[in-house]
Image (cartoon, rainbow, N blue to C red; front, side):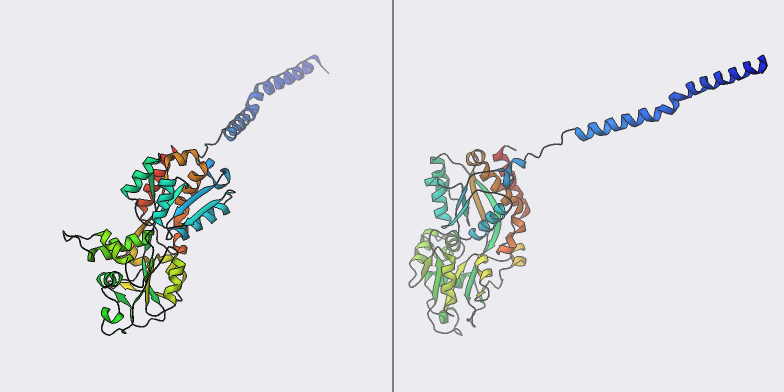
Length: 353
């Protein structure tokens, strides 16, 4: 091989090596870019997720017991919510005592033995003062709406509707026989079954129906006189247990009673609800504000209890978050959305959230 050929081959090899060296960075660039992308992805994956401030109040994250007491009307709803709370993992006990709104406030505000008071009426000024005396400041939580049902036995075939005035005259004893209400009705004695004086249902009936017929010296509705008239009604049967009232009304076509709508719904086969002022108690009439005996349902607690007992805060949070998924099944009606939100806002404030 000539010297010229050997020299040409050497130059070609050298040139190819130089070109290969110059091209290497261009080929390796995608590798660098891929590594950078993987690093960024890994960093994003490893970044801590934002924590849910309410995770510490999940049913399975708290311990201890919750004690509630009060309204027999709120009882079925609170009992349902307690069961759901435990189904979601709460291992403590939730006590729900049905003793009447007044007795519930006494246990909460006087004895200081309960964490939550259930009520089918707003708290009275005297009860707020009693709470203050033991260092408690009641916080109100609106949880639903009840349509108080005026009921008779399904065997009754002559009464379908009453006016508030007619009902009031029955409950004050002005009408003692059904023929006093309407001449076409039987001349049979009216048998009244009523919640007792510790019941918020009793208080509501006195205020809404009885007191307008028991006027004081100034001609104004007097609830005290109304209470005395109803409690003094000859032959009336009183009980804090709504199931006792149900059984009493079921037993006679001439009996009449009243209690929360849930108890009527549960016993609608044996009872019939009487329309008041021509309006029947149902979701439509309550939502439209037409049924004249609709009323709010409440729970009350205290900021110190809520902060010192996470299980109470957790139960209230669960209750307010899930009540609308359960309330119609129980037999009541949802609270207005704005009222339910105000209750949640009040709870968050008490929890410091």
